[in-house]
Amino acid sequence: MSDYYEILGLKKGAALEEIKRAYKELAKKYHPDVSKEHDAEKKFKEINHAYSVLSDPEKKQNYDNYGEAYKGFEGYKQQGFGQGTDFDFEDIFNQFGFSGFSSFSDLGDIFGGRGGRTAGRQKQDVGSNIKMELTITFDEAAFGVTKEISYERIERCEKCDGSGAEEGKVKNCPACKGKGFEVRQQRTPFGVFQTQSVCHTCGGRGSIAEKECKNCNGNAFLAKQAKLAVKIPAGINTGNHLRLEGKGHEGRHGAGDLFVLIFVEDHPIFKRDEEDIYAEIPISFTEAALGAKVEVPTLDGKAELKIPAGTQTGTIFRLKGKGITRLNKQGEGDEYVKVIIETPKSVSKKQRELLEKLESEIESAKKRKSLFDKILGKE
Image: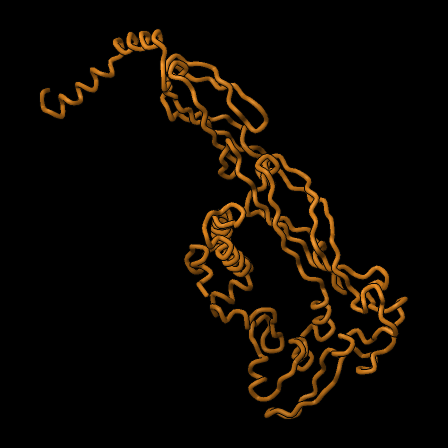
């Protein structure tokens, strides 16, 4: 597995802002819907995985300290051995035959850690997050839009209200006698330890269904197709995401969140850089030489641009406030228009005569001759 910092093109220990910026650029480059790279999908997955680790302060710290072994250090802070210390005690106890913990919350019960069995179980019973992608047009990103999305979500069974029992009728679990946990003793080099673990029969609830709910087959939850209207704010860009709290999978003690990752389609005219947009327009030789007023495209229609006499090809003009709304900020960016002087591919006889007459009055040929004379040392 490659180094996560290398995947994002960063040096180890890079700051969060650098990580976000690198992810944004690479996600735009390798998104399978827009990239022409043959291995874009693979790289996109690697980029997302690297970002999911390095953007999380706790995972990032563990990864910086332990590299790929960080996976064995995440998810549990053992309070009984120094508050806030990340350590995988399960491996140590397994070496001495003290195995079989159903979760790290069992250790909290033994050594007096705060939270204990109930809090640990409730955390596990919170529904998981959902991540999805949404592609929108350039204009929708610029002005904002409300999009209806459809996605699969695990929801509480309405018929049994998440009990898994027909008509909600339950009885005490025969395995744990309604306690929700099992008590067992285990002999180790440290002596005999008594532990409590979540009951495997009832999952810690202390009760089971008298008769399983027919609608969910006793599972208490069902996979359903959910529909949701999502408000996309003006100024959003590729790589930004929306977090919709409580719209993820449901669990016994709450629902996870829905994360919507945004991708913006290219525009046929405009290119975007943060809040500024860029466009190129053609003008004629006479418009450049004599000056003119020309219409140029903007996001909200047309605008008049004054071309001064003697304008050169490649000149860039700024239209203040004609860019994209700043996301979560006040004001708009600017539009930059580059003018390209078009040379006619064919001219009429009359046009040729006029151009030849004009050429005779222009000093360009004399200037070129002067340059050659300097090179050849004739001056």
